[in-house]
Length: 463
Image 1 (spheres, rainbow, N blue to C red):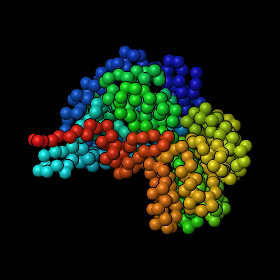
Image 2 (image 1 turned 135 degrees about the vertical axis):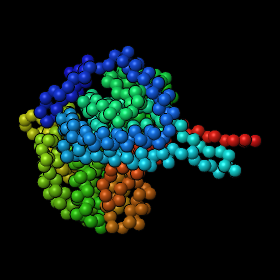
Image 3 (image 1 turned 90 degrees about the vertical axis):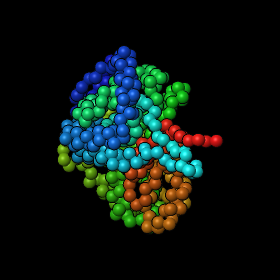
Image 4 (image 1 turned 90 degrees about the horizontal axis):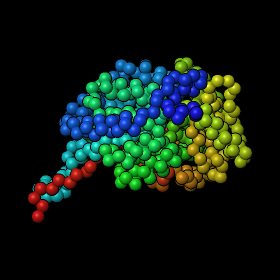
Protein backbone atom coordinates (compact mmCIF):
# COMPACT_ATOMS: atom_id res chain seq x y z
CA UNK A 1 0.00 0.00 0.00
CA UNK A 2 1.23 3.52 -0.79
CA UNK A 3 0.07 6.87 0.50
CA UNK A 4 -2.49 7.25 -2.28
CA UNK A 5 -3.67 3.81 -3.30
CA UNK A 6 -4.07 0.19 -2.39
CA UNK A 7 -4.69 -2.63 -4.82
CA UNK A 8 -8.42 -1.95 -4.61
CA UNK A 9 -8.94 1.66 -3.51
CA UNK A 10 -7.74 5.19 -4.10
CA UNK A 11 -6.90 6.60 -0.68
CA UNK A 12 -7.43 10.17 0.45
CA UNK A 13 -5.04 10.92 3.32
CA UNK A 14 -4.66 14.25 5.10
CA UNK A 15 -1.01 15.24 4.54
CA UNK A 16 -0.99 17.40 7.67
CA UNK A 17 -2.04 14.61 10.03
CA UNK A 18 -1.74 11.29 8.23
CA UNK A 19 -5.44 10.67 8.88
CA UNK A 20 -7.33 8.70 6.24
CA UNK A 21 -10.17 10.84 4.88
CA UNK A 22 -11.67 8.39 2.45
CA UNK A 23 -11.16 5.22 0.45
CA UNK A 24 -12.65 5.12 -3.04
CA UNK A 25 -12.95 1.69 -4.69
CA UNK A 26 -11.49 1.41 -8.16
CA UNK A 27 -14.18 0.87 -10.75
CA UNK A 28 -14.59 -2.30 -12.73
CA UNK A 29 -14.29 -2.61 -16.50
CA UNK A 30 -18.08 -2.73 -16.60
CA UNK A 31 -18.37 0.59 -14.74
CA UNK A 32 -15.76 2.19 -17.01
CA UNK A 33 -17.64 0.94 -20.06
CA UNK A 34 -20.86 2.44 -18.72
CA UNK A 35 -19.19 5.82 -18.15
CA UNK A 36 -17.75 5.86 -21.67
CA UNK A 37 -21.14 4.96 -23.08
CA UNK A 38 -22.79 7.80 -21.16
CA UNK A 39 -20.12 10.19 -22.49
CA UNK A 40 -20.72 8.97 -26.05
CA UNK A 41 -24.48 9.30 -25.75
CA UNK A 42 -24.19 12.65 -23.97
CA UNK A 43 -21.98 13.99 -26.75
CA UNK A 44 -24.67 13.34 -29.32
CA UNK A 45 -27.04 15.60 -27.41
CA UNK A 46 -24.64 18.17 -25.97
CA UNK A 47 -23.05 19.10 -29.30
CA UNK A 48 -26.49 19.92 -30.71
CA UNK A 49 -27.19 22.56 -28.08
CA UNK A 50 -26.36 26.01 -29.39
CA UNK A 51 -23.24 27.57 -27.92
CA UNK A 52 -25.25 30.20 -26.03
CA UNK A 53 -27.01 27.40 -24.15
CA UNK A 54 -23.71 25.73 -23.32
CA UNK A 55 -22.36 29.09 -22.16
CA UNK A 56 -25.33 29.39 -19.83
CA UNK A 57 -24.24 26.19 -18.12
CA UNK A 58 -20.85 27.80 -17.49
CA UNK A 59 -22.53 30.76 -15.80
CA UNK A 60 -24.51 28.36 -13.65
CA UNK A 61 -21.36 26.44 -12.75
CA UNK A 62 -19.62 29.64 -11.66
CA UNK A 63 -22.44 30.34 -9.24
CA UNK A 64 -22.43 26.78 -7.88
CA UNK A 65 -18.67 26.99 -7.31
CA UNK A 66 -19.07 30.23 -5.39
CA UNK A 67 -22.00 28.89 -3.38
CA UNK A 68 -19.97 25.83 -2.40
CA UNK A 69 -16.56 27.50 -2.20
CA UNK A 70 -15.91 26.73 1.45
CA UNK A 71 -16.69 23.02 1.18
CA UNK A 72 -14.57 22.68 -1.96
CA UNK A 73 -11.67 24.66 -0.50
CA UNK A 74 -11.65 22.69 2.74
CA UNK A 75 -11.65 19.40 0.87
CA UNK A 76 -8.66 20.58 -1.20
CA UNK A 77 -6.83 21.59 1.98
CA UNK A 78 -7.61 18.33 3.75
CA UNK A 79 -6.63 16.15 0.79
CA UNK A 80 -3.45 17.76 -0.53
CA UNK A 81 -2.44 20.36 2.05
CA UNK A 82 -2.97 23.62 0.16
CA UNK A 83 -3.31 26.49 2.66
CA UNK A 84 -7.01 27.27 2.99
CA UNK A 85 -6.74 30.87 1.79
CA UNK A 86 -5.03 29.67 -1.39
CA UNK A 87 -7.64 26.92 -1.84
CA UNK A 88 -10.41 29.52 -1.64
CA UNK A 89 -8.54 31.53 -4.25
CA UNK A 90 -8.41 28.47 -6.51
CA UNK A 91 -12.20 28.11 -6.42
CA UNK A 92 -12.76 31.79 -7.15
CA UNK A 93 -10.34 31.60 -10.06
CA UNK A 94 -12.37 28.68 -11.43
CA UNK A 95 -15.59 30.69 -11.15
CA UNK A 96 -13.99 33.57 -13.03
CA UNK A 97 -12.78 31.12 -15.69
CA UNK A 98 -16.34 29.91 -16.27
CA UNK A 99 -17.69 33.44 -16.58
CA UNK A 100 -14.89 34.55 -18.90
CA UNK A 101 -15.50 31.69 -21.32
CA UNK A 102 -19.25 32.16 -21.13
CA UNK A 103 -18.74 35.75 -22.29
CA UNK A 104 -15.90 35.39 -24.78
CA UNK A 105 -15.92 31.74 -25.83
CA UNK A 106 -18.86 31.77 -28.27
CA UNK A 107 -17.08 34.27 -30.53
CA UNK A 108 -14.04 31.97 -30.62
CA UNK A 109 -16.22 29.19 -32.01
CA UNK A 110 -17.93 31.31 -34.66
CA UNK A 111 -17.34 30.41 -38.32
CA UNK A 112 -14.09 31.92 -39.56
CA UNK A 113 -13.89 33.74 -42.86
CA UNK A 114 -11.24 32.84 -45.43
CA UNK A 115 -9.58 34.62 -48.34
CA UNK A 116 -11.63 32.66 -50.86
CA UNK A 117 -13.48 35.12 -53.09
CA UNK A 118 -17.18 35.88 -52.66
CA UNK A 119 -17.18 34.42 -49.13
CA UNK A 120 -17.72 30.95 -50.52
CA UNK A 121 -15.45 29.20 -48.01
CA UNK A 122 -15.35 29.29 -44.24
CA UNK A 123 -13.86 27.35 -41.34
CA UNK A 124 -16.27 25.75 -38.87
CA UNK A 125 -15.12 24.57 -35.44
CA UNK A 126 -16.77 21.24 -34.65
CA UNK A 127 -16.32 19.25 -31.42
CA UNK A 128 -14.38 15.99 -31.56
CA UNK A 129 -16.27 13.91 -29.00
CA UNK A 130 -15.57 12.55 -25.52
CA UNK A 131 -12.23 13.74 -24.13
CA UNK A 132 -10.33 11.67 -21.57
CA UNK A 133 -8.62 13.95 -19.03
CA UNK A 134 -5.95 12.53 -16.71
CA UNK A 135 -5.41 15.20 -14.08
CA UNK A 136 -2.99 15.87 -11.18
CA UNK A 137 -3.50 16.69 -7.52
CA UNK A 138 -1.76 20.05 -7.12
CA UNK A 139 -4.72 22.19 -8.26
CA UNK A 140 -7.55 19.67 -7.88
CA UNK A 141 -10.30 21.89 -9.32
CA UNK A 142 -8.45 24.47 -11.43
CA UNK A 143 -6.40 21.97 -13.42
CA UNK A 144 -9.57 20.11 -14.35
CA UNK A 145 -11.71 23.10 -15.26
CA UNK A 146 -9.11 25.05 -17.21
CA UNK A 147 -9.22 22.21 -19.74
CA UNK A 148 -12.82 21.12 -19.28
CA UNK A 149 -14.59 24.48 -19.56
CA UNK A 150 -13.33 25.39 -23.06
CA UNK A 151 -13.69 21.80 -24.27
CA UNK A 152 -17.26 21.56 -23.00
CA UNK A 153 -18.13 24.96 -24.42
CA UNK A 154 -16.96 23.70 -27.82
CA UNK A 155 -19.45 20.82 -27.55
CA UNK A 156 -17.21 17.98 -26.39
CA UNK A 157 -17.93 15.80 -23.39
CA UNK A 158 -15.38 15.12 -20.66
CA UNK A 159 -14.27 11.96 -18.87
CA UNK A 160 -12.14 12.83 -15.84
CA UNK A 161 -9.63 10.42 -14.33
CA UNK A 162 -8.30 12.33 -11.32
CA UNK A 163 -5.28 11.70 -9.10
CA UNK A 164 -6.06 9.05 -6.47
CA UNK A 165 -5.22 11.26 -3.49
CA UNK A 166 -7.83 13.93 -4.38
CA UNK A 167 -10.85 11.81 -5.20
CA UNK A 168 -12.89 13.62 -2.56
CA UNK A 169 -12.34 16.88 -4.45
CA UNK A 170 -13.16 15.11 -7.70
CA UNK A 171 -16.53 13.90 -6.41
CA UNK A 172 -17.38 17.36 -5.08
CA UNK A 173 -16.64 18.78 -8.54
CA UNK A 174 -18.87 16.14 -10.12
CA UNK A 175 -21.62 17.15 -7.70
CA UNK A 176 -21.12 20.80 -8.68
CA UNK A 177 -21.51 19.93 -12.36
CA UNK A 178 -24.79 18.17 -11.59
CA UNK A 179 -26.04 21.13 -9.55
CA UNK A 180 -25.20 23.43 -12.47
CA UNK A 181 -27.53 21.40 -14.67
CA UNK A 182 -25.07 19.68 -17.00
CA UNK A 183 -26.87 16.75 -18.66
CA UNK A 184 -25.89 13.16 -17.95
CA UNK A 185 -22.78 12.09 -19.80
CA UNK A 186 -21.41 15.58 -20.38
CA UNK A 187 -19.00 15.32 -17.43
CA UNK A 188 -18.09 11.84 -16.23
CA UNK A 189 -15.75 10.85 -13.40
CA UNK A 190 -13.95 7.50 -13.48
CA UNK A 191 -11.80 6.07 -10.70
CA UNK A 192 -9.61 3.51 -12.44
CA UNK A 193 -6.11 2.04 -12.30
CA UNK A 194 -3.48 2.73 -14.98
CA UNK A 195 -4.79 -0.32 -16.83
CA UNK A 196 -8.19 1.33 -16.90
CA UNK A 197 -6.66 4.49 -18.34
CA UNK A 198 -5.04 2.43 -21.08
CA UNK A 199 -8.34 0.76 -21.90
CA UNK A 200 -10.07 4.13 -22.08
CA UNK A 201 -7.44 5.57 -24.42
CA UNK A 202 -7.78 2.59 -26.75
CA UNK A 203 -11.58 2.67 -26.65
CA UNK A 204 -13.05 4.10 -29.89
CA UNK A 205 -15.55 6.15 -27.90
CA UNK A 206 -12.73 8.37 -26.62
CA UNK A 207 -11.86 10.95 -29.28
CA UNK A 208 -8.83 12.62 -27.66
CA UNK A 209 -6.74 12.70 -24.51
CA UNK A 210 -5.32 15.41 -22.28
CA UNK A 211 -2.86 14.96 -19.42
CA UNK A 212 -1.33 17.25 -16.85
CA UNK A 213 1.39 15.41 -14.99
CA UNK A 214 4.98 14.22 -14.98
CA UNK A 215 7.23 13.69 -17.97
CA UNK A 216 7.13 9.94 -17.36
CA UNK A 217 3.33 9.95 -17.38
CA UNK A 218 3.33 12.13 -20.49
CA UNK A 219 5.56 9.71 -22.37
CA UNK A 220 3.29 6.80 -21.46
CA UNK A 221 0.01 8.56 -22.24
CA UNK A 222 1.39 10.14 -25.41
CA UNK A 223 2.59 6.77 -26.68
CA UNK A 224 -0.79 5.17 -26.07
CA UNK A 225 -2.66 8.05 -27.68
CA UNK A 226 -0.30 7.90 -30.65
CA UNK A 227 -0.82 4.17 -31.03
CA UNK A 228 -4.56 4.84 -31.19
CA UNK A 229 -4.05 7.84 -33.54
CA UNK A 230 -5.77 10.19 -31.12
CA UNK A 231 -5.08 13.85 -30.55
CA UNK A 232 -3.49 14.57 -27.18
CA UNK A 233 -2.43 17.59 -25.16
CA UNK A 234 0.38 17.15 -22.64
CA UNK A 235 1.13 19.73 -19.93
CA UNK A 236 4.13 18.31 -18.13
CA UNK A 237 6.87 19.47 -15.80
CA UNK A 238 8.92 22.61 -15.66
CA UNK A 239 12.19 23.90 -14.26
CA UNK A 240 11.37 27.50 -15.00
CA UNK A 241 14.04 30.23 -15.02
CA UNK A 242 13.45 33.46 -13.11
CA UNK A 243 15.98 35.97 -14.45
CA UNK A 244 16.90 39.13 -12.56
CA UNK A 245 19.24 41.56 -14.33
CA UNK A 246 21.37 44.25 -12.70
CA UNK A 247 18.92 47.06 -13.54
CA UNK A 248 15.84 45.30 -12.11
CA UNK A 249 13.62 46.67 -9.37
CA UNK A 250 14.81 44.34 -6.62
CA UNK A 251 11.86 44.96 -4.31
CA UNK A 252 9.43 43.81 -7.00
CA UNK A 253 11.70 41.00 -8.14
CA UNK A 254 11.98 39.57 -4.64
CA UNK A 255 8.23 39.76 -4.00
CA UNK A 256 7.53 38.02 -7.29
CA UNK A 257 10.19 35.38 -6.68
CA UNK A 258 8.79 34.49 -3.26
CA UNK A 259 5.25 34.05 -4.57
CA UNK A 260 6.43 32.45 -7.79
CA UNK A 261 8.47 29.84 -5.94
CA UNK A 262 6.54 29.15 -2.74
CA UNK A 263 2.83 29.45 -3.54
CA UNK A 264 1.03 26.12 -3.18
CA UNK A 265 4.03 24.97 -1.12
CA UNK A 266 6.13 25.09 -4.28
CA UNK A 267 4.06 22.37 -5.95
CA UNK A 268 3.48 24.20 -9.22
CA UNK A 269 4.67 23.26 -12.70
CA UNK A 270 5.11 26.86 -13.86
CA UNK A 271 7.12 28.17 -10.91
CA UNK A 272 10.30 30.13 -10.28
CA UNK A 273 12.50 27.12 -9.69
CA UNK A 274 15.83 28.43 -11.01
CA UNK A 275 16.56 31.98 -9.84
CA UNK A 276 19.18 33.21 -12.32
CA UNK A 277 20.57 36.46 -10.95
CA UNK A 278 23.09 38.75 -12.69
CA UNK A 279 26.26 38.98 -10.63
CA UNK A 280 25.98 42.72 -9.92
CA UNK A 281 22.88 42.21 -7.77
CA UNK A 282 23.09 38.56 -6.73
CA UNK A 283 24.36 39.32 -3.23
CA UNK A 284 21.67 41.90 -2.46
CA UNK A 285 18.91 39.89 -4.11
CA UNK A 286 19.91 36.82 -2.13
CA UNK A 287 19.91 38.73 1.16
CA UNK A 288 16.43 40.14 0.54
CA UNK A 289 15.06 36.88 -0.81
CA UNK A 290 16.26 34.85 2.18
CA UNK A 291 14.84 37.45 4.56
CA UNK A 292 11.44 37.37 2.83
CA UNK A 293 11.42 33.58 2.65
CA UNK A 294 12.27 33.25 6.35
CA UNK A 295 9.12 35.25 7.14
CA UNK A 296 6.83 32.69 5.47
CA UNK A 297 4.75 30.75 7.99
CA UNK A 298 5.00 26.95 7.79
CA UNK A 299 2.20 25.12 9.53
CA UNK A 300 -1.39 23.95 9.70
CA UNK A 301 -2.94 24.60 6.27
CA UNK A 302 -6.27 25.45 7.93
CA UNK A 303 -4.68 28.32 9.90
CA UNK A 304 -5.22 31.78 8.46
CA UNK A 305 -1.57 32.85 8.66
CA UNK A 306 -0.08 29.73 7.04
CA UNK A 307 1.61 30.22 3.67
CA UNK A 308 3.52 26.91 3.46
CA UNK A 309 1.48 23.81 4.21
CA UNK A 310 2.48 20.16 4.11
CA UNK A 311 3.52 18.58 0.85
CA UNK A 312 0.82 16.43 -0.70
CA UNK A 313 2.50 13.06 -0.08
CA UNK A 314 5.33 11.81 2.10
CA UNK A 315 7.07 10.10 -0.84
CA UNK A 316 7.19 13.42 -2.69
CA UNK A 317 8.73 15.09 0.37
CA UNK A 318 11.34 12.35 0.62
CA UNK A 319 12.20 12.68 -3.06
CA UNK A 320 12.53 16.45 -2.72
CA UNK A 321 14.81 16.10 0.29
CA UNK A 322 17.01 13.66 -1.63
CA UNK A 323 17.33 16.21 -4.44
CA UNK A 324 18.31 18.91 -1.93
CA UNK A 325 20.91 16.65 -0.32
CA UNK A 326 22.31 15.70 -3.72
CA UNK A 327 22.65 19.37 -4.69
CA UNK A 328 24.42 20.17 -1.42
CA UNK A 329 26.78 17.23 -1.92
CA UNK A 330 27.59 18.64 -5.36
CA UNK A 331 28.79 21.90 -3.78
CA UNK A 332 25.79 24.19 -3.30
CA UNK A 333 25.31 26.19 -0.09
CA UNK A 334 22.28 25.88 2.18
CA UNK A 335 21.03 29.31 3.22
CA UNK A 336 17.68 28.32 4.71
CA UNK A 337 15.66 25.19 5.48
CA UNK A 338 16.76 21.89 4.04
CA UNK A 339 15.69 19.62 6.90
CA UNK A 340 12.67 17.39 7.42
CA UNK A 341 10.79 18.49 10.55
CA UNK A 342 10.06 15.87 13.19
CA UNK A 343 6.47 14.95 13.97
CA UNK A 344 3.33 14.28 11.98
CA UNK A 345 2.69 15.66 8.54
CA UNK A 346 4.55 15.86 5.25
CA UNK A 347 6.08 19.23 6.07
CA UNK A 348 9.18 20.63 4.41
CA UNK A 349 10.43 24.12 5.25
CA UNK A 350 10.95 26.84 2.65
CA UNK A 351 14.49 26.19 1.50
CA UNK A 352 17.07 28.31 -0.33
CA UNK A 353 20.10 26.87 -2.11
CA UNK A 354 22.85 29.21 -3.34
CA UNK A 355 25.91 28.71 -5.50
CA UNK A 356 23.99 26.33 -7.73
CA UNK A 357 25.64 25.60 -11.09
CA UNK A 358 24.44 24.08 -14.32
CA UNK A 359 25.88 20.68 -13.37
CA UNK A 360 23.91 20.30 -10.14
CA UNK A 361 20.76 18.33 -9.45
CA UNK A 362 18.51 21.28 -8.64
CA UNK A 363 19.50 22.97 -11.90
CA UNK A 364 18.85 19.96 -14.11
CA UNK A 365 15.85 18.37 -12.39
CA UNK A 366 12.44 19.70 -11.44
CA UNK A 367 12.19 20.22 -7.67
CA UNK A 368 8.46 20.02 -6.99
CA UNK A 369 8.31 21.60 -3.56
CA UNK A 370 9.36 24.68 -1.54
CA UNK A 371 12.99 24.86 -2.66
CA UNK A 372 14.59 27.76 -4.54
CA UNK A 373 17.95 27.51 -6.34
CA UNK A 374 20.01 30.67 -6.82
CA UNK A 375 22.35 30.69 -9.82
CA UNK A 376 24.76 33.52 -10.64
CA UNK A 377 24.93 34.80 -14.24
CA UNK A 378 27.92 36.79 -15.50
CA UNK A 379 25.73 39.00 -17.69
CA UNK A 380 22.43 39.05 -19.58
CA UNK A 381 23.70 36.77 -22.33
CA UNK A 382 24.92 34.23 -19.81
CA UNK A 383 21.56 34.42 -18.02
CA UNK A 384 19.83 33.63 -21.31
CA UNK A 385 22.13 30.67 -21.94
CA UNK A 386 21.50 29.32 -18.45
CA UNK A 387 17.75 29.74 -18.86
CA UNK A 388 17.71 27.74 -22.09
CA UNK A 389 20.05 25.06 -20.75
CA UNK A 390 17.18 22.81 -19.71
CA UNK A 391 15.19 19.91 -21.09
CA UNK A 392 12.07 21.79 -19.97
CA UNK A 393 10.42 24.81 -21.55
CA UNK A 394 7.24 25.83 -19.76
CA UNK A 395 7.56 29.49 -18.70
CA UNK A 396 10.27 32.04 -17.99
CA UNK A 397 10.28 35.24 -15.95
CA UNK A 398 12.50 38.23 -16.64
CA UNK A 399 13.02 41.28 -14.43
CA UNK A 400 14.74 44.28 -16.02
CA UNK A 401 14.15 48.01 -16.47
CA UNK A 402 15.25 47.79 -20.12
CA UNK A 403 12.14 46.69 -21.99
CA UNK A 404 13.91 46.67 -25.35
CA UNK A 405 16.47 44.23 -24.00
CA UNK A 406 13.60 42.22 -22.50
CA UNK A 407 12.02 42.01 -25.95
CA UNK A 408 15.27 40.82 -27.48
CA UNK A 409 15.76 38.19 -24.79
CA UNK A 410 12.15 37.06 -25.15
CA UNK A 411 12.88 36.29 -28.79
CA UNK A 412 15.56 33.84 -27.63
CA UNK A 413 13.87 32.19 -24.63
CA UNK A 414 12.82 28.61 -25.36
CA UNK A 415 9.60 28.49 -23.35
CA UNK A 416 5.86 28.48 -23.90
CA UNK A 417 5.45 31.73 -21.99
CA UNK A 418 7.57 34.70 -20.92
CA UNK A 419 6.54 37.02 -18.09
CA UNK A 420 8.34 40.37 -17.89
CA UNK A 421 8.52 42.08 -14.48
CA UNK A 422 5.90 39.74 -13.02
CA UNK A 423 5.71 36.07 -12.05
CA UNK A 424 4.22 33.39 -14.29
CA UNK A 425 0.58 32.34 -14.00
CA UNK A 426 -2.17 30.72 -16.04
CA UNK A 427 -4.96 33.06 -17.12
CA UNK A 428 -7.86 32.39 -19.53
CA UNK A 429 -7.00 35.51 -21.52
CA UNK A 430 -3.69 34.03 -22.69
CA UNK A 431 -2.64 30.59 -23.84
CA UNK A 432 -0.72 28.20 -21.60
CA UNK A 433 1.59 25.34 -22.48
CA UNK A 434 5.20 24.38 -23.03
CA UNK A 435 7.86 23.11 -25.38
CA UNK A 436 10.62 20.51 -25.06
CA UNK A 437 9.81 18.03 -22.27
CA UNK A 438 7.23 20.40 -20.82
CA UNK A 439 4.80 18.99 -23.36
CA UNK A 440 2.79 20.13 -26.35
CA UNK A 441 -0.61 21.51 -27.15
CA UNK A 442 -2.19 24.53 -25.50
CA UNK A 443 -4.81 25.34 -22.91
CA UNK A 444 -6.80 28.53 -22.31
CA UNK A 445 -7.62 31.52 -24.57
CA UNK A 446 -8.99 30.67 -28.02
CA UNK A 447 -6.29 28.01 -28.39
CA UNK A 448 -7.85 26.06 -25.53
CA UNK A 449 -11.31 26.25 -27.09
CA UNK A 450 -10.12 25.05 -30.48
CA UNK A 451 -7.57 22.47 -29.28
CA UNK A 452 -10.20 19.73 -29.30
CA UNK A 453 -12.13 20.91 -32.32
CA UNK A 454 -12.26 19.68 -35.87
CA UNK A 455 -11.40 22.74 -37.95
CA UNK A 456 -13.70 21.90 -40.83
CA UNK A 457 -13.44 23.62 -44.21
CA UNK A 458 -16.80 24.36 -45.83
CA UNK A 459 -16.52 25.50 -49.49
CA UNK A 460 -19.49 26.27 -51.70
CA UNK A 461 -19.42 25.81 -55.50
CA UNK A 462 -15.70 25.20 -55.87
CA UNK A 463 -14.94 24.65 -59.55
